[in-house]
Amino acid sequence: MCTCSVTIIPVGKGTSMSDVLSKSIQVLDEFEDVKHQITPMSTQLEGPTERIMQAIQAMHEAAFESGVDRVYTTIVLDERRDKDLSLEERVEHVKQKVPA
Image (cartoon, helix red, strand yellow):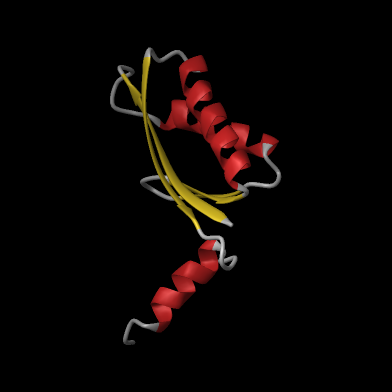
């Protein structure tokens, strides 16, 4: 299973990015096999690697379609092939090791 953190940064449309980013997030509805979670700094994706890469391309293009001339996208991809761990399971493993 593959997990990914993707950050889309539209450049040149003022300081607010929510209008452009909402369009990038909406395209994820087309990828039913890619689970997503929005965070304040990025969007977390989980699913098959090929589909995640397609989803990222669609998110990147959606930002351009919103009218910006430049888009800066960062991708952190983690693919583990020996076992499947969801985003929630990864977080839970860390939480279990943090003293209360």
